[in-house]
Image (tube, rainbow over all chains, first blue to last red; front, side):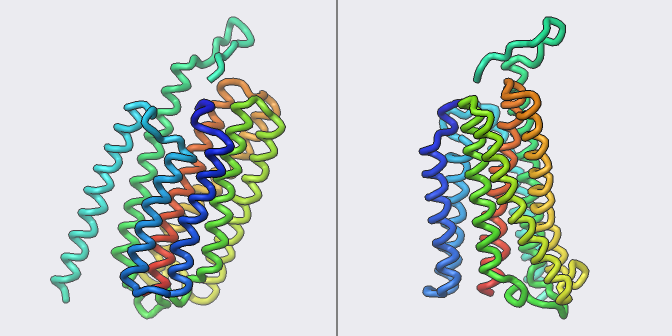
Length: 99
Length: 202
């Protein structure tokens, strides 16, 4: 929480980037200009980039973030990977076997 | 961060270090919340094809409605950022103004979400209709409950700023509330990308 975390310029930049990254997938779904597979790719890519934009411009996560916070992110990331990945793996494997 | 000057010798108040530890503690809470939301997303992905005899996602998702919700939440995130900025620059009036703007956008989001839920339930797409709808209402409802609690937090924060002024502990709480609010906008990116858009495509 310091002047570097927040500045009006940074907030406006973050807002414009987030707006563009929201409009891209909505436009793709709205117009159906591409095949469904390509649209899924656009949605996924825009979402991942927009999460990054929010973390950097709004939550102030950058190279100066304390190591404890970064460790907490990494630990949560590992838990999410194991639990979400495991859930999807087991449930869709079960689904295939039940067909 | 400005140094905190205690009003009386008897109540020294929290030190810089204490406030730093509180930020870390709140950050760890946000990470646990991220795990809860991730698992609700996983549940939704497992369940969304289990529509029983009820409606399928494309029957009930209105993309214009979702776009309006997305804009309200994104704008509220930015206006909260301006409130934080005003607090850092010691501009009490500006901070309160931006937080009131944030509440308006947040209320707009909640109004749209509640009207969506009520419309769905009235048309027979209630949580008990199918596994898909149970998972949908649990995930999106949990997010909505968080946003509603965040708005209670913002209201309390406005009164704290007005009554206590922008003291170091108040600014520290404002910072943590801001982290919570920005985090909820990140969860919403997941909701429109994983729930609404694929539901409309499939």
